[in-house]
Amino acid sequence: MGGLPNIKEIWSDQSLLGLSNLRSLKVVQCKSMSKVISFESLVKLHELNNLSISNCHSVQEIFDLDRPSTSGDVETLSELTTFDLRGLGSLRRIWNKNPCGIVSFHNLKKLEVHDCPNLRFMFFPTMVKSLELLRDLTVKRCKKMEAIIMEEEGSGLETSKTLAFPMLTNLNLQRLESLMCFSCGKYSREARSQDCIKSSSNALFGRQVAFPSLETLHINDMDNIEMIWDNQAIADSFPKLKSLFVDKCNKFVTVVPSYILGRLLCLESLMVKACASLEVVFQLQPPNPLDGHHVALLLKKLKLSNLPMLKCIWDKEIHRQVKFQCLRSINVSECKSLTSLFPALVARDLIQLEELEIYECGIVELIEKEEGPGPRFDFPKLTSLKLELLIELKCIYTKRHALHWPALKTLEVLGCNKVEILVSQPNNEMPLHKNPLFFIEKPPRVKIGFIQTDGDMA
Image 1 (cartoon, helix red, strand yellow):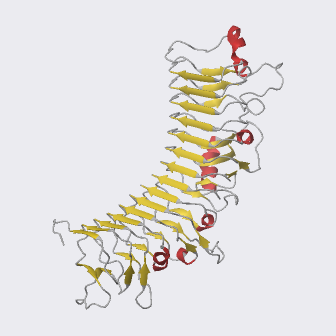
Image 2 (image 1 turned 180 degrees about the horizontal axis):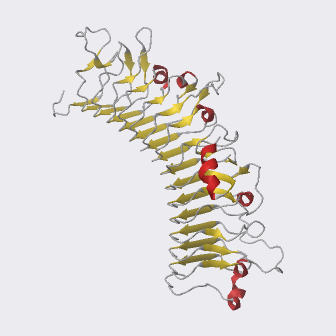
């Protein structure tokens, strides 16, 4: 039903008899409606599978759970599989009281909430147990959202047990400017603004909630959050995480600290962009939480863009314990403070690398110099190397070295004005104080584009 600006209620008491077979309910642009489903109608919706409410600008709550004292125990919405709320500008709460014992979401698989600027939280802790089949959770553009799960003062008993979303596969949180954490305990509004925020250094995830099946995590525009995980994150969380996307989280200093790194053994794709304070992507934090154990990540794709404060991707110690041998694609752009790309030990691990693209960075050398004789770097599967607008770039590696990339097909060097000599072989005589961009043992058969910003072709 939609486009009914004068309708205040969907059902009257006399119209409830025919609801038991209703499977899908969609309410759109009912501008006078303040509540959508009363308790009397809720108990009749035995077969409801899909519930969607959008652009009803006067709706303040979805479910009115006030019930007669004679109604007895009842369980509702047990067949609901998808629940969608969008464009509800006045929505302050989904239910007007704790729905535990009334509403059950045992079959809910997909929940999306978009553009509800006055909604402060979504679930009480006691509800989470019924979300055992939830697979997809998306929350976007909810300006006043403080937490996804919150125990309000005076609303019920606070749970001290770990909460879990055992089947949640995809979690998408975007433009939640007031979000302090995923789950907060029983706090008054004043306490949340002080103690709750400071307690975990503003981490999105802590010890309260477990995500044993999560595969995709997308977060952006969260300026209250300083990190994704604190050092108390639950041990069995995130073991299946495959894809992590972070965008416009301007208080982040690092993305993947070492205390969580050992759990992300399935991570295949990492994309980070527009985080104004980010300094390092993978960080080993003392005391050493890896205890000397080597970690081999499955990471295949790494994309970093518009990170003006990024100083290094891998800190100086992490590469001694963490291997990145599965990386196939690396794309780095608009990172002005980044002066080198790889520690030498990381570069030696990249035997699966196929594509390397770097644009508009402060890169001076691609591989950090290490002590010892001139090294050899093997990239047996690299097919494409593109270096563009790297105005500080002088060479791949400052000392004499040997590069071996037999599969290289495309080499593009554009706007790298400090590069004077493109290619040389290790045994060739070189002018004093001049290094080529590459020392190559055997020049490959490759399409080369070398263009300086004044338009000259070399």
